[in-house]
Length: 291
Ligand SMILES: [Fe+2]
Ligand SMILES: [Fe+2]
Image (cartoon, rainbow, N blue to C red; front, side, top):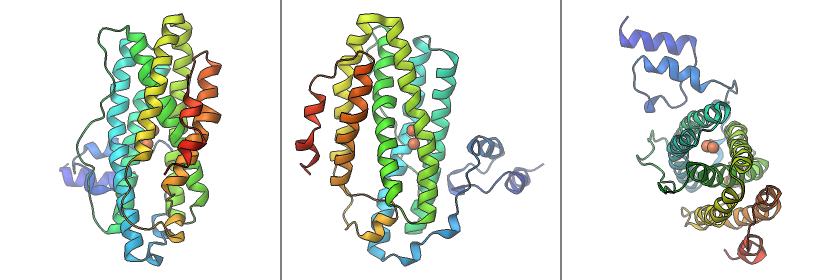
């Protein structure tokens, strides 16, 4: 069988690729499509209301989805690195498999973002190459390294992602965007749960020294997440129509992060016995309204 006919067979009996221009055009695509369709949640691509938007509104959304595609793509490497840390620390099988699966989920999220860029801009872009760098201290105990990066990647970043995705989905009226955000959200919930579950286990194993390692990472992880929120945004007004396509203002995102820190993250860490220092004040109302 030729490569072309193998790919054609796959396309016929598996599913339509989300962003075909980001694939190899080889028989690898068959297994890729099986991995990507782990959850059957078809996206209604043809129900997009993009035609109702002005060129400036489309441009604003295309740039946002371009940034989202880069972030989702980097998250593939984030979970790959976290998996290495977890293996080194002797993490249990379910933690390992879910971490590896999270990386696969991020590939799918990147594909969805690329398709959204195409919808708004007509351009078939690919994510920029790169990889996220996680803190790496080879001299520290492997358990501490693993739990620290689980806090950074999963407990803080992914938990915040679930809260911001929920709020964004609530204002989204475009059916295609709503389905894409729902699909991503359902994975991010599990990505967050992975870290909290592992953290509890690691603290039970590691005792007081593990608590200290966790407490040292909390402010670093919160600052890292806040840096992303404080970053400059693409130019362009966030009109009501743009909001309906799943875009909030930076000020709204600050409010959500602030609430997430105070109502979810700090209570969660403290319930596990991890002191959070001045986190509640650092990301309180003064920070929330500073934009
Ligand atoms: Fe993601
Ligand atoms: Fe994720």
